[in-house]
Length: 332
Image (cartoon, rainbow, N blue to C red; front, side, top):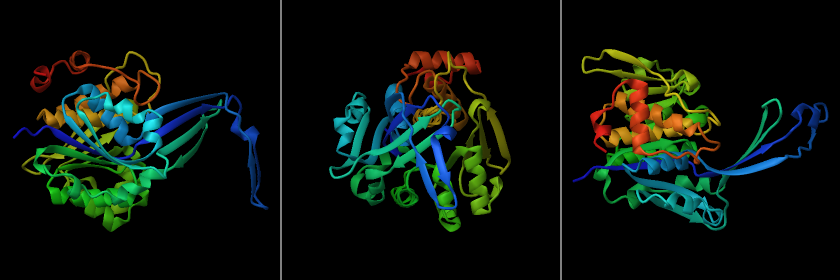
């Protein structure tokens, strides 16, 4: 049996980025006593990007073209009409196992940036809210073919359901709660950690998990095999225990991009690198290093799914960054 599949769970969304050439402060009128608010913002530009955690991860996995990807999610009728479906179908290794709700819109995030880099953000979940109704046990007939799954950011209920289903299917998973971390209750959070093999998040999210669960890093490592902490321009950190219960903390530097246009989606590129490394049976450390490489390509263009790279470019940047190429990566 060839075990080369990864399962991607998370959000699929449209990102609308707009620019406002003034300061929001000058466009807002607030009367706190009367609880009245008024604001008129006229954007001078508007760009549509394909986004969402699951979509961003799947796009990078498609470019890498190593793992066979099963992407689950819930979208609206506009997912096809606005081009997102065709955009992902360009990849022969990405299988779209999505539920289309014709009466709903695909999730959308509207972001307006002013001249001070202040942001006004409006998010509409739409069909994303239906992910909680997906039953992986009904949809997956061959769970033994999956190397790993990533349970990434969406509603708490959906993530909790998926964690239990993945555990029942015996598919090892990466728990990636992201910005919804504060919405988890303590007991639920601990239960999900017990159902997962790897925890990933940025410094802020990992600290929230420790505070919410009242667990230390050492306590968390009693439930998961490893903790991966992303630290932006400072790189990332892999924390794990060996067979003697000795804890190791390894710093992973960033890979230098040719230029930096937009950091949106870099973390999702990192996650795609990890999943690919695990598919190739790399060590988790090398998989994280591959994640750093993929993340560096993401920041070179505007938008989380506009970059392009191939295996030769990945190998070259890996060698230039770390001074060697893992044999598993050399062979592809």
